[in-house]
Length: 166
Image (cartoon, rainbow, N blue to C red):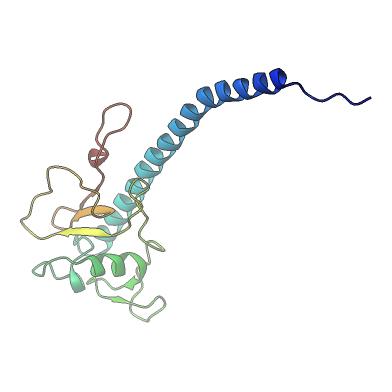
């Protein structure tokens, strides 16, 4: 004769599952944030290396200046093109494989900020300082004049370090 579970047995199992959920869910959500912080640090390292290599190969002019002209205001499109297309010594860009444009590409695409899911780059004009903090309006904030890039992210990690200062 088949025997079914009693209501008390079912309630005990449900309570045990609830207790396990209360213990496990915070551990899992904490590891998700930790993974995003690690990805942020890695993406910033990748962007900073691109900027350094680009600057070394382009007459000490960082990416972002249209056609490598430091008298012009830097633009997001110039930054993206100089990262993802081929370029010549002067910083002019062309499709990959174009004769005379032997440098690059340095990246396939601009990485997405893992904290705010944005890949746009806020370009700071020459003479303009970085804002006091990130506001999540862009993925990154870049100052071509000094070749500095920061995450445009509000908040801090579990150690109290601001994402903006990574």
